[in-house]
Image 1: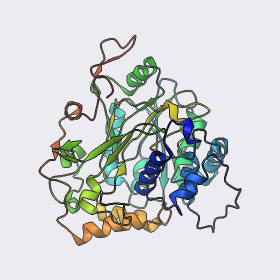
Image 2: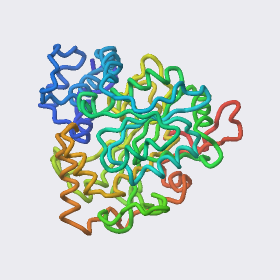
Image 3: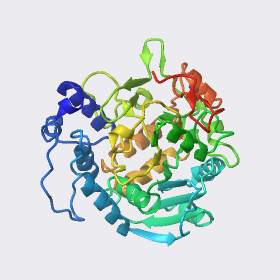
Image 4: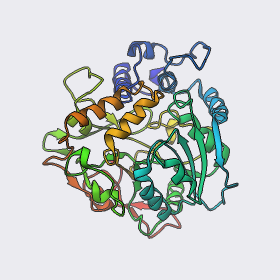
Length: 410
């Protein structure tokens, strides 16, 4: 029941609408989702030939009530989903003092060198990587990395809930009872004091606060020039290519909007619709389409942990509200048109690839299209995100006891 959340039904319906539209999940109606809240869906026959939207169905069940009735079913299917992965290289057990990173990649070669450099510098000692049908040299690059446990996936990405089951299954196999990082190849995690404090120290900080997850919203990064010309240059950092981001607000215009939900903190970003329009989905009113930017990339895994919707891992009550990290999101850097067409061509994403194709077409038809504008801010380290209100800073001086934040959660 909605009353278990302490929410009015209309408020919950509005939030679900935002989530569904921003994830491009085409449910038949919002009313159907609300009406099925708390009920176990009828058992269906899953076949390879089915055109059903697995992400749509599972996210609907996740957000249908305070207790996820299909939770155990999702965990079992996550374990079973690993059968569709082919092990390319096994590195054996993970040392107890190592935080592993789990990621799924497809044609990410331009960004991989910096991805590994960045996370090795933060102390990641094992990368568990699922290569999903890459054909741009990504596979060969990954085989050359000595700290990569590598899997290959040729199908079932959609059936694995956009890879969420693979992530959950791999974490349950390798990192139960310990911390693990789950990020995409175009996301670089930053936090206050990262130059001096590793991810292990950050995990210890979280534990001292009684927390099992890190709240780190995404922040879209972009170049001053056109998206089509924002290519990766060997030897040049991604942040030097795309150092700009939108502020929370400027004057009366909000580029990001913070909301409250029963699933965890919510932050909606409007910079993409500001430039691209609403593409394949029309909002219910004249307001630009918002995209969910909240993420919880660092988690201490338990028997209950599940990543079905990456924006709201389960259990919901473990999702903290204080942003102690930020994921710099470099989606708009690299061979943008080529990459989006490649993903669309897989035919395994939640909307059949229509949104990826729409992004590619928009940039291809408007070569000068740029996210940069008069209110753009330039990244100059985590301090610039603290001053803009995205990130909270930390006193690291008393790490042996409890960490004291310089600013309390708003």
